[in-house]
Each structure stands twice: as structure tokens, then as C-alpha cells.
Image (cartoon, rainbow, N blue to C red; front, side):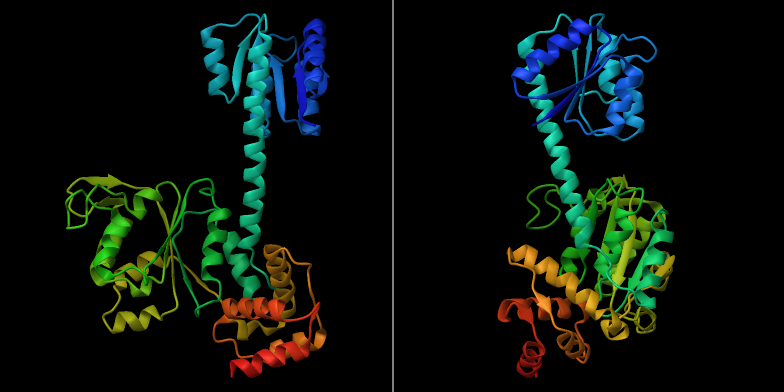
Length: 387
């Protein structure tokens, strides 16, 4: 049952609203002034709050301000018998869902509450989705090497410093980039990812900086690039070691000037982007071989984070195994399987050239082909088939 809090100093209004809304199957709580209402909003969860504006001690606008300060996401509908355009505009600007004048129109109240309920449900669904996303990019492990990575993320995330993430394929460099973004002040803005190795060299500049209509044969309309799409947020340049030298020069200019120019255009566009880059290559060797610009390397590597290989953190395999079993069984709608100690020990003997990505695939295969509990025989059967 949806819960509604009514804050109004007039008993007759409170009781009338309670009677009407209870008939509509809402669970109603009442507060006789702003102070009591604010306390109830802090200590309980409501789907919608109806709040009068003119009240003694603490008026409705003050209640609205306090609720915003406390980051309570509940939609708030302001009501007043002394309404005017300025008051309504002020309430909406401060974050109220809507403003209704007294005498209250029953139909408008019910419609506004239903609309506010829709927003409340959307907020709840968004929170659940964010928790799922956050769990998806969780860094699992207790090894010193992975703890060092987590500590570095905690230090650099709140800043706007550029970060270069290095490590072999499959170690979780993308996870590190996501965690930095999630813990940064830009977390509510876009996280845009570009896989530089997957885009042909002749298209990478258009992908990053966009293009104007007619700038090349297939440019049938104007298109924004990843730098523009990431404005205010984070741009993750994965496999940057595979970027062409001409694109590197333009990226360097974008980082120096915080401006970009679309392919085929001459207008400079200002962008505010935090760049995080990742590579499995040794960029210093690439610089020596004239495959990577040294000045770009120094621009990107304000902070260096090296992600360890799985072979360097074998003791984390029990934690990783249980983590992936829970995740994969959940995704497949299966009961969570167990894993025998002997199976864990056998998993530790494997040489993981594909690191965490390879390990996850192995666990998924063992879940699909194994019994209720993953046994050492299951792991040995996999090892034999893989060799």
C-alpha cells in the first residue's frame, strides 16, 4: 500500500484529505506542523508528501528546503490557500513536484498524486538499478595488490585528475574506470566508453569528436562525438595504445584546451570531460617505437593504476568463485550452487592467461555442466578439455 504524509496545520484539511485518500486505498500519516512533518519524513519512507505552505514555526517552503538538504527523494506536492504565481514558481524551483491551491479540487489532487506516485516508482527503480550496476562493477579481492588498487581509487576518485590504468587483458581495467566514476563528483553525469582498438583508424576521429554533415561520403547528418556526449562526466578511452597517431594529436589538443572541433567543421566546442584511459600495452616501449606520443602519455598519466593479473592474486580465487557463482546463478534464475574445497584448490592450479574474464567464463561453464555442487572432477574435466 502506498504511503502518503499530509503536513497541514488545519485539522479539517488534514482529516478531509485523510478520509478521501484512505478511501483510495492509500496509507495516510498526519503531521500538524512543519517540524513534526519533517521529523516523520526523516524517520519513515513515504511515496508522496502533501505539504501546506502557510504554517506556524516552520512553513512549507522551509520544510521543502530541509527535505532537499537531507536528500529525501519523495515527491512533494505543495498546497496553499494563499497561492500566487511567485509562490508556485518558487516552490517548483526548489524541487516541489507540483503546487495546488485551496480550496482543493478532488480530481486534481488524485491525478497529481498518481503522477507523483509514478515518479516515486521511477526513483525507486533507478535506485535498484544503480545498486545492481554498482554491484556489477564491484572490485572483489583481499590480496594486497587489489587492496592497493582500491585505496588508490578512493584517493583519486573525488578529484578530476586524469588516470591511466594498465594491466593485462581481462584483469578488470574497465571496473576500475567505472569505480572511479561512481565515486567521483561526476557520478550523476555520463560515463562514455570508447574501445579504441575496435574502431578503424579512419573512423576514430569522427567517433571521438563528431562530424558535420557532408564532411565525408557517409556523413549524411551532423553527429556529436564521444567528447561532447561525455560533457560534464567521464570519458573512458579503453585500449588507448591502439589509437592512431593523428587521433592522438587531436586528443592531446582536446586535453590541453578543453575544446574540440568536429570533423569537417571549423567551430570550436568547449567540453568539460574527465578522461580515464586504459591499455594492456607498455606505452613507454610504444613511445620508443614511435607508436605513441610522449606528450600525450604525460597528459594521461597524472595518476597511474596498475591492475594485477589473476596469477598474482591466486588467494582471491575462493572469493571470486563464490562471487561469480552468486552472480551467474542469479542471472540464469538458478539455485545458487556450492563449490567443493578440492575444486577451489584445483582452480588455483590453472594458469589464467585471460585473467578475471577467463575465470568468470570457467565458472559459468562449471555451473552449466556441473551438478548441485561444483566438484574437483568438474574442474579437472574442464582442464582436460581446454588443453
